[in-house]
Length: 374
Ligand SMILES: *Cc1c(COP(=O)(O)O)cnc(C)c1O
Image (cartoon, rainbow, N blue to C red; front, side, top):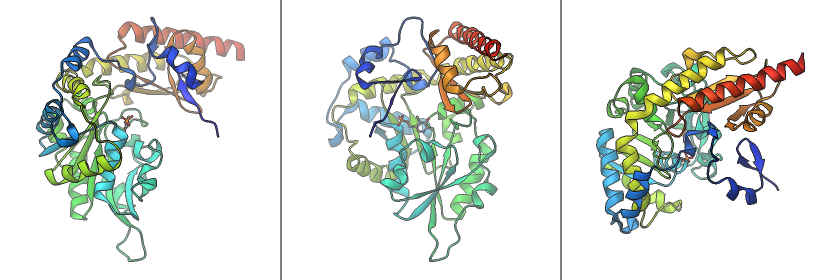
């Protein structure tokens, strides 16, 4: 069996990866906000972090990070996990039994990009609903709840994603989340929030994460994306939930020892980065407006609400992979997400000049392709 490792937007041998570990000078890497590298301040904090064995609960830096995360979200407790995928899986495992169904949006990360771990490991079936721009309503959720009949599989959990990545970084209005949580609880269901980019949603709404997530029984968010930490995600919830989650983290191989060295960077990310996310959002808006003016590319800039820009290139005479390969040559890295769909994600390692460069390169490449096709 062979599989590929993404290198830029091309497919590379694992051997070649070492070569491109550090971004090249002059490269505008818009594939994802996961590519952000730790700041000098983070690296210094990592070098100087006080540490202990976190499996024994003795790492002071991890404990501090968990305490701060719980405080910021107004929840009782928090847990540091290696990845967002593990945080989602632990949450699903904690709230369900084998044979249960988990309601999620069709394009959601838990449905598409977590290797079906909710089935493979937690023994659950995803039951998808489609929301306009990836944002579900209670009506859409209610329609796919299974009836309480003994021979039907049973719904246990609703998983919301805010922002919704593959719908283009769309944001849930807080009233919508509240309404869904109230109805879910009345129906005996739990709500997990995949808040990988919840701080981006907070920046868009101009709200704090605590009121935005107060109805959710559990929340996962990533330190390693727009917040800029090198590694790590957090889970927050009640004390009882986090106790169970801690057990499953260990069961899934996620118990880390002197994890304070990475938690130290996470703390800085958590304290300092949320306040600068609006810059990424302004850059994304600029990208969307520029793309809308390039003949052959299509996007509605009004729908770009955070740091993710997804546009259609079906009228440009090239596929998304062809387009990504063509701009890659000019030092602009983009991600194909479907046959004619390309994603750009802004983050702290790309500035306005980088976005202008990306637009100029896109325009050049698409114009050339259209001339060749004409
Ligand atoms: C990135 C992401 C995750 C998981 O993150 P990893 O840390 O890469 O495992 C989960 N949900 C969403 C919406 C994401 O974008």
